Amino acid sequence: MEHFTYPAILLFLYMSSCFLIAYLKNRNDIADVAWGLGFILMAWSSYYFSVTKTPLSLFANTLVTIWGIRLSWHIFLRNKNKTEDFRYLAWRNEWGKWFYFRSFFQVYMLQGLFLFVISSPIFFINNTLEIQNNIWTWIGATIWLIGFLFETIGDAQLSIFKKSNKNKIIESGLWKYTRHPNYFGEVLLWWGIWLMSLVNLQNFWGVIGPLTIHYLILYVSGVPMLEKKYEGNPDFENYKKRTNRFLPWFSKNDQ
Image (cartoon, rainbow, N blue to C red; front, side):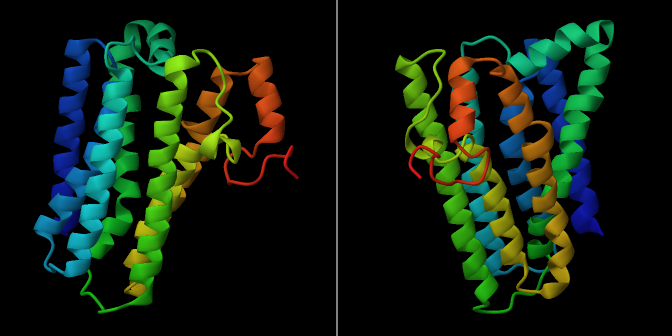
C-alpha cells in the first residue's frame, strides 16, 4: 500500500504548503499553478514507491511531466502581474470571515483529493508488470498526443488573440470547432493515460481518473464557471449558437 499511502501524504503536505503560499501572497489562484505540478509529484512519488520499474512507467510519467510543466508555466504567465482570478475573487467576497478556513478545505484539500483520484491510471501504470508491445500503449499515447496538442495549441491561440483583442470572443483556429479546445484536450489526454494503463486489464478501475476530470471540467469548475462569466454577452451568445460546447465539430455556419 506504500505506493498509494506515501504519495497521499506527500500530496497533503504539498497542498498545505500551497495554501500557506496563497495566504502569504493573498491570492488563491496559486491553486491553479499548483494543479499541473501536483500530478508530476503523484507520478514520480508513486514510481519511487512502486515495486515495479518499467519502460512504460517511465514513458507515462514523462508524458505527465511534460503536460504538468507546460500547464503550470502557462497559468503562471497568464496570472503574472494581474489581479486574482475572478472565481477566487468571488469566493473571497462570498465567504467573508470564513474565507481562509473554507479556502484550505474547499480549494486546496478538495483539489488535492480530486488530483489524487484523477492520478489513478498513473498509479496503476507505476505498479504494473509491463506487457511488451501492447496495443493499448500506442492507442493511449496517440490519444494523449491529440489531447496535448488541443490544449497547447488552444491556449496559445487564445493568448495571441487576447493581446490585440481585449474583451472579444475568439472564434478562430481550434476555437472555431469547440468553445473549449483546451479543456477538451485536458480531458482527452487523461483518457489516453488510462488507455495506456490497460496493458493489464485489471487496471480498468483506473477509469475513475478520466471520468472524474471529465465530469469536473464539463459540469463543475471548468466549462460552467467560464461560460457563466460571459453570460449575456451578445458576441458570446452568437458564438454559443454556432459552436459546439465541448466536442470539436464544424461550425453551424459551415454546414
